[in-house]
Image (cartoon, rainbow, N blue to C red; front, side, top):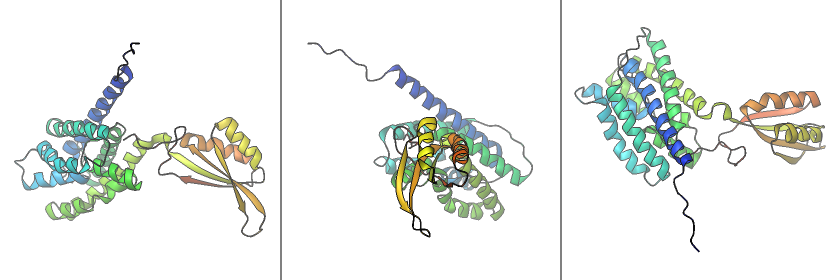
Length: 292
């Protein structure tokens, strides 16, 4: 009996590839606008490898910024070859090439006179561009690769790891440019790190909720029926009263948290509720684990 041929690369796969290329391209162009339009004219540095690239360019101005960035990424890719997935690795190679090209070709004049406002504006632009890049299945190289490695191994958030990796860049910025430039760069990096987290997670950020209430059975039914989210019932004992309690534990997304709180207040205004941010949630229904 002849087995029918099943294509391994479908139309949906092609669409996903095109979306990834579009995200890598758009994000790289946005970041290049900030670098060439604000950061270089104000003599700031940028985060991680981009910042190191600008420092080297300041010392050796004859070298092209895009080429410096590409050369620095070679050892990073060699180190990451066995640590990240093949898909992420290949897309990151493409992303690095696109960003290097964008650094060389994209020249936009963004006139911002005040240095503090320029640092904030650059951070916003880079945060948006970097977040768009990381929403793809790749990166633009540099610290993005190291950040994903840290996220996969130690669950360190993308923005936090990028911020931590910039200490050496800030020191070099103070030495090569000035202390003022290093402080402005710190502002830009902090803003960019927060924007990256916001763009990557967006409204899909998950919240962990713990609920202690005498009316827990009704609250549990409402969560299961209206929010269609799973719950866990945890037996507990009051530390002061010694009475038996049941704690409801659930994970909902950012958009559902308001509805959940209103529901709880209507059922039991005296309920004790704790809402916590999550780093990662791994489950096919509610999970927002990275796609790398």
